[in-house]
Image (cartoon, rainbow, N blue to C red):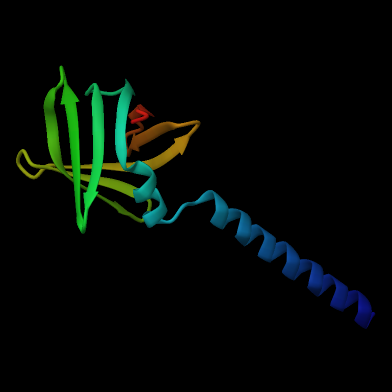
Length: 123
């Protein structure tokens, strides 16, 4: 009976540790997500034609373009997996609850479910 209880405990510990590792792999850290956003993206579904995420030192700049001219500009940050844009026009904040990249497509989903999609521009 002692061997059975010990074996059951080992199986339970393995099961719990495997579940945690699988969760860690699927959820990138904020820093990993920041690094993956850097660069230019062309719009598949959204308001602007292109968007650009830049980082110089501690400053993170966001720019969107419409008809090859600046559309919205501001700063950006990732906090707990959410993308927060602070637009220069009136300090308006735009928050995307879900941010992920799948098959080289950036998906940005707002709290109301509105989704924007962008394809990375190879430079």
